[in-house]
Image (tube, rainbow, N blue to C red; front, side, top):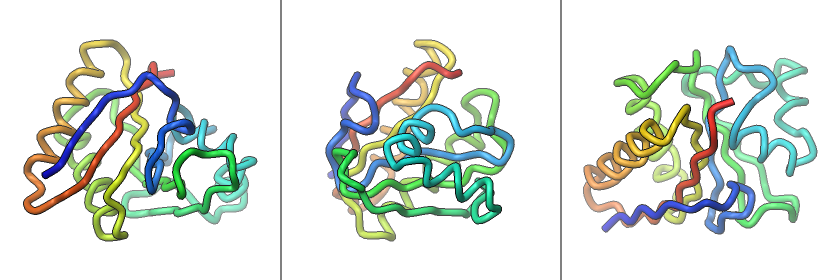
Length: 151
């Protein structure tokens, strides 16, 4: 059975096996949870982006070991392609993809950082993630979610 909880703590302080955030091809520098994780990882993601080792394209996944500055064991950056303007069918697909990547990697305790423009969008994101978790048959994932203001 999957569980979803919401936290007001920043992504870098959320416990879990992995702290996950999206990166997008058209958002430079990274923002939201990805920017926070990148900062805590001493700019590792930024250097990869600058050197063309990462782009944020759909299907791209970057797993980085904790350097002692995160509460989670790992940081996962999931490429989302072009950033969606608001929650849409494509956003649900991205959320489903993120959960699938975590499940396939063997993670069951997730910390996820998302961005929303306002409280209504944050609630919609939380509901969508909860529904996707519930649809994942046989999943025993625990997900701790934090949502920051869209920058």
